[in-house]
Amino acid sequence: MRRACASLIAMLGLGALVPAASAKPAPVGATTRRACPAEMAAVRGFCIDRWEASLIDRKSRRPLSPYYPPQPKALGRVREVWLVERERAGDPGARRMPLPEPPSVQLEGSYEPVAVSRPGAVPHGYLTYHAARNACQAAGKRLCSEAEWVTACRGRADTKFPYGAHYVAGRCNVFRALHPAAVLHGNASMGLTDPRLNLVVEAGKDPLLRATGASTGCTSAWDDGVVYDMVGNLDEWIDDPSGVFVGGFYARMTTKGCEAKVSGHAPSYYDYSTGTRCCADPTPR
Image (cartoon, rainbow, N blue to C red; front, side, top):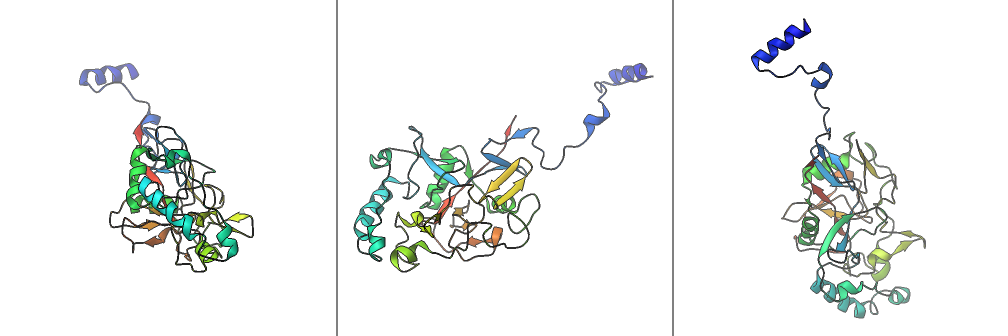
């Protein structure tokens, strides 16, 4: 009987018999035919960085300082201003705090920022929308759309917070008791380009800006692993040229979780709290 069926199929040009098991549809979100790089998670048809972006120089592969804007002119301007202003603002303890020194590759002014996604790195603040977009593009990636970012943040369980449906204080690095500008300048709305802001620590040991992945309870779970810090740590620019960043940063007083969003700034805006992470389209295996 099987031989007769095979002969009939061959006559009709229908090809070989296919075992029934192989005819099952692939599960939703399967990545058997498409793949994401190891530093990215596969999320419903796109890839997203597991960790917030830090920046390196394309040629030398050396890390760039996360405490300055990555554009050479902006870095020089900010550094020049704060070498003077740090001695004028705040209490004596704040004035004694030195500026972080950029690496020589940045001081020389010839470098190209590239976004990388790595655990245990200080994520790069001081990014404009354009700087974030360019760094992702230099890495062969792109900024995430708002829909992609929110989907990834909510995780496989589709919850308001990476870890669940309800806000839990301390799970993500957000709503911190200290504001770094209040600590250094006595006013939370002043001196927001000061390169020292993300170096402030709480209780002498807990940095306000934490290394990527340090908040181990703040993860968005997906089939091939987790995505870290989508709520808190740094605000993250998304692909909206009108100027939108999402997720909240460590001192933002928000309990909106994956719904946290700021749209009141121009795309040219930056301060210590503005970072990003990249998305990409999956590549065929």
